[in-house]
Image (tube, rainbow, N blue to C red; front, top):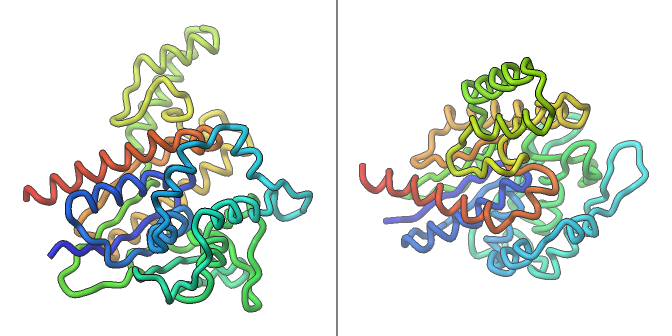
Length: 302
């Protein structure tokens, strides 16, 4: 039996890797019988469960910086920067709204109650309402009002919802985590940068020397967003983003320890952030395929 219960972590544009991973699983003869996700994981997982993954992949693959900006319905508000309605409507044009309980593949999305800190689990009701709540990054997207609650990103409490995916006898529990932080690798980067900065080289020469000295498996060292640790430039936005990254990494590790998956696929947190990530969907999807293929090879050859 090659049935898979699939858990997908939060992770912004890194979550596009889940598309390639799903394609690799199906190509290898695995049947995904259930899926659970937080934030980006709920977005890709929900669209897959609704049968819209091919259309979504094509749409993502054609995004450029201008298209990404047109999807940002910027709002003048004290509690969010983007309403988040425009991107959901664009996706709904590809994948029509459906109730979760009517999906052919059981699906679960998780969100967080902003005030109580409780995890809110969606297993029924409108699919895109659940996804919209699950992807509501605090301070970035407008929180979702639902049944008297104020909901934000599910990654705040259950970054990798291994304990929420529906299980069937004999299935294989597969997790894809895109929030892993390699402390040794980051320290190596910081040590290299400190050593280079002491040479009083120009900023461009510093960057080129660091690029020449650092290689990350599967990532493109020529693209600054794909290898420089988020937070390394110590500005307000990067520090806030880094803080979320540390939280997500820690929560994912706890989830893996609590509910060990049969197959674990990991992608470093320090890759594909911001507009760079959203405009490089093709390579992120392919990276997800490669990582899943490697993990399946290891699992099948045990």
